[in-house]
Image (cartoon, rainbow, N blue to C red; front, top):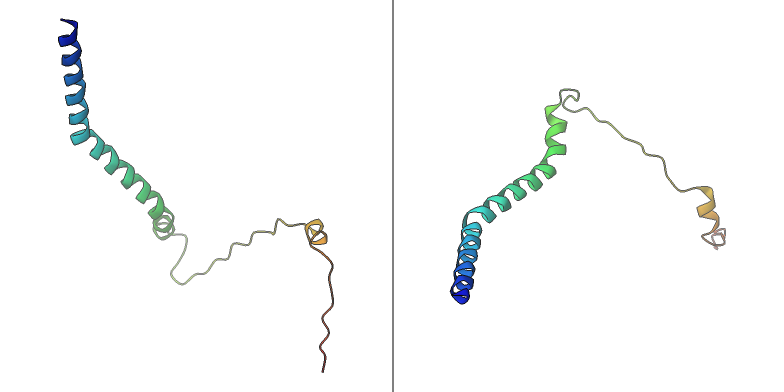
Length: 85
């Protein structure tokens, strides 16, 4: 009797996973792909949808260099270039 109960539970688990693979997994995969593709499109769409920028307007975002002068001292010895004629 225990063997039949075990086989019945295995069959139920098998069919549940089979139904999930047919219906649930494709739905979740489609949602995931749509969400990821939306993340790639959002920055560009957000820029065009916001009315703050006009067509042809150029903005330059300047970020300061994070290197300090100490980093340049550790590179090596500087040699002046002299042109030989």
